[in-house]
Amino acid sequence: MQTWLTVFIVVASVAIVVQVVLLAVFFTMFMRLGATLTRIATNVETKVTPILNRADRLLAESEGQLHDIVNDTRDIVARAKATGQRFDRLLDEAAERLRQQIIHADRMLTGALEAIEDTGAELRKSVVEPVRTATAFVRGVRAGVDFFRGRTRVPERRRDSQDEGLFI
Image (cartoon, rainbow, N blue to C red):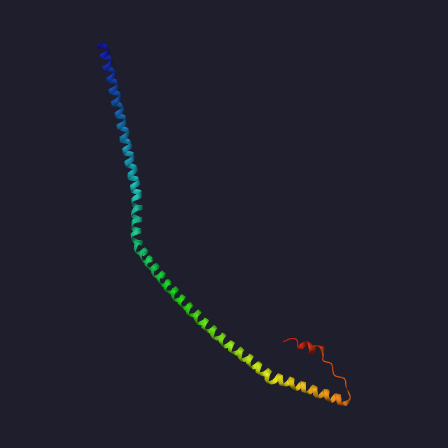
């Protein structure tokens, strides 16, 4: 059993030595990795820090300008809205005035047309009817004179004048 014990102790010792060597290798690798990561982090920090500082400075400088731009835009929108409302009121007033003028012109034209119709009716009554009567009288006298002269022929009415009476 003693050999077994010796073999076991040797194997255990070799395993412990291998573990120690592996731990030492891991330690060295982690130390190198740590140094590399520190170097990379420092490199990134030296390159990124000025960019971030510059962006922060630009943002701080432009914050007032952005605030002014927003305020100016707000003022422009408010003025445009007020102008649009005034323009809308103006258009409404102009449309109402135009409507009133059109109504007035329509009334005037209607009155003028009625006056023209009345004048035409009066003219027809006072001029055309007496002229027709006079024309009929002259024709009657002419027919009578022709009859006494010996012309017994009664003049035929023209076909056009007969058709004229059919149309009103």
